[in-house]
Image (tube, rainbow, N blue to C red; front, top):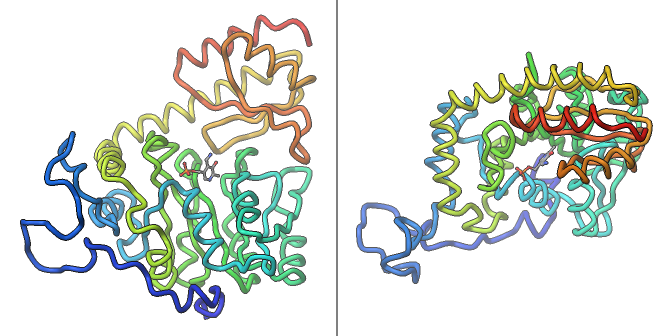
Length: 348
Ligand code: PMP
């Protein structure tokens, strides 16, 4: 069933067989991969493990996602790109998104010549489930992307709604849970995979795990999808230093949990601070590590903050998001700097 959804050339793909994959057994002299016998740092002279097995074992231990159901990408961005290349034929197939949402789904689709069907969110920024399902039936997208908690709105969509869409969708449903760790009482779409193997979940080390520079994303999916993902991804897509960084981040789960607590506290504090400012129209409730805020003149405020050395994200050009800024939760001193600058602003 899933195989039928794949592009024909992917179905028949003979994957690259890397030196690290070809041998099994015990060896301690490696003359198979044209590497250097020494390097500038320990371990980097060798190619990394293509299947990232140590990291995936630790992911199972710490996060609970079964080893057989995980695959590692060079950031979740790479996974998004690869999934589109597995399932969507250029100039024929489409993906579906619910805008406003994370931008790379449509950019990666466009770079592959794949169309984008866009179903707007409701004015409340909730999912328009009925319209999504109507469009799924009409347009038959190969992949439906659902971002929950959504970037840039911070909104979590109820799992029952995600399930309803995934069940109606005959194609793949990718649920991007990059910000899940910051949500309270979050129900992951991981639980849907057992009953619907067309569901894929994305997680990342870039947010709560504090390793954006390591570029580590996790694809959680059924065995059939993992099998094809490992064939299509570049053989050494995740570097050795990145794998080590991921292991370290998981070893430091206690400090991750501490940071998540701090983000939730500061998110609450910043939201209430913002809502009292005379030029703020609305603070959107957020389950992520950012707050979306509507102001009188977002571009003027953006420029003002920049003049104070503070960069936020202007989301005003997105549908439904006129005059909004997205502000990431930072350290305590960064939040203090931001608040001080916001208090001083008089030109609204
Ligand atoms: N998904 C969402 C919703 C994001 O906001 C981002 C990054 N901002 C990503 C994925 C990309 O994550 P990564 O760093 O793992 O590529």
